[in-house]
Image (tube, rainbow, N blue to C red):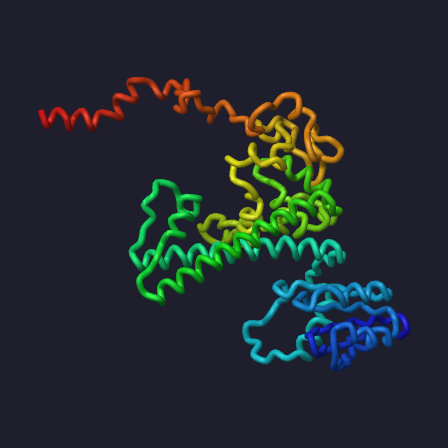
Length: 385
C-alpha cells in the first residue's frame, strides 16, 4: 500500500473543517473534524502518507489553503461548487457527507477545478469587483430616487435625459413641505453623491494601477479593440488572470459565457447567452462613445481599431495588433494620421456636414419606391378632396 493515493475531500468553513480521506487501495474512508481556521488543516495533511491529492470547494474562505498546501508539496485543487452533480432526491446534507463526496468524486475525476490566482492577481480582481459593486449600488440609488419622485408625481421639466448636470441641479432645488419626505429625499440624494464619488475614486485608482500592474501590456492591447477601454480591459484581465491557460479560443468563449444555450431535442432553437456573458458585456462598455476623444487616456488608442476591420487583422487574445507599439499604449499610425476623434465613421454610417444621412446608392431606394410608400397618404388626400 505504499503507492496508494490518498484522496482528501475538505469541507472548509471559517471555524471548522470536515476532512474525509479516501484510500484508493483499500477503499477505506476515514473522516475527521478539525476545529480552527482553514490553515490549521495543514497539520492533518502533512501527517498523511504521500502521495496526497486534496480538494475543497471554492468559497468565501479564499485560496489561502490551496497556496499553503502547494507550497508544502501537496496537490491541492479547488473545485467549482456549481459543477458538482447533486441528486434531486438528496435530503440530508452535512459537512461530513460533503467531504466524503468530494473525496470520491475527486478520485473518479468528476470535479471541475478552477484556476487558483496569485496573490497579486487576486488583489487586482477584488478591485475590479469592488468597482462593479459600486456601479450596481449607484444604479440602485438612482432607481430609488426616480421611483420616489414618481410616487410624488414630480417630473423633470428639462429636455435632456435623467442624471445629466441639468437634472442633478433640478434635484438639488427640490424641497418638500413635510419633514418625512424631505428627510427621505435628502438621504437618497446623499447616498447617490457618496456612491458617485466612490465610483470616480475607484476609476482613478484603476486607471493608475492599469499602467503599473503586471497586466499593463495586456490591458494596453485590449484597449485597441473597439468598445474596450481601461475599465473593461482591467475587468477582463481580473477575471481571466492568464490567457495562456486556455488552449483554444472556444475554451475562452465558454469561460466568458458567450456560448448560447441549446435544447435541440425538439423544434426549439438556440437560446440566449449565459448570464456571466451579459455581465462581462456591461463591464466592457467602459466609456460612452461620445467621450472617447475628450478623454486623454482614450485618445491614445489605436486608430486602426476604430476603422472598419481589415482582413486578417484579428489577433488572438493578448497579442499585439500590427499598428501597436511594444508598450501598447499608443499606435504610431494614430499619431501621424489622426488629428481629431479616433473614431473614424465608416462610409456606411457617415453623416454630412449638415447632420443629415447620406442617401444610399441602392436602386431599391428609387423615387418610384418612395412614391409607393407615400401612396396611403395620397389616397387619404384624394378621399378628403
